[in-house]
Image (cartoon, rainbow over all chains, first blue to last red; front, top):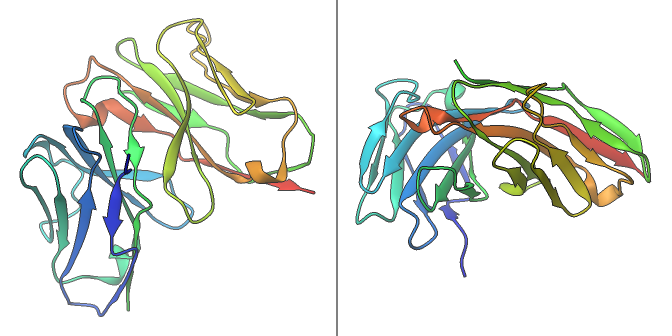
Length: 114
Length: 115
């Protein structure tokens, strides 16, 4: 079956513009995660969804970042008024539940803010 | 709080060399342990996992044993290949934590294999 799909794969935007990143998880996976990976760095947790609700938004770096998930499926991460420090690879992952199931990652969206 | 510490890279080896990437952890509860691998230009994928003490996870010639007494989960492979060049992430999932922060990743170790 299909894996986690993210779009776009690459996005170049001008500073100050808004961007939307999309994640389509594996069908039936109730848990969905967003991470950020900066060049040469590890994974920075951003937000987690269980179904459509986000019990943990603690990782969002500022109020310019928001995310939603509809129908327990597709999620959108929105970054408003982008800054150059937002440049990174944004990774989405899903898992069967939020217990000890392993995460299944998408290939990421590479965001470059010029 | 929970944490994962893995050896810093980059690690450069010749083909057919023996590989060890160290990983140690601290956890409040009884975590499951994972190794994820990220090949160039791709997303992370699960390499292997172990859910309780003394379990050994294995896949593609890689092995790691869950050592509770040393709080370690070192990744090993007896003979590496060029195709193993990637970034390797150690991770834990601690069910005693109540949020997604229960999934903790190490900072990653970049492995390069010379032909």
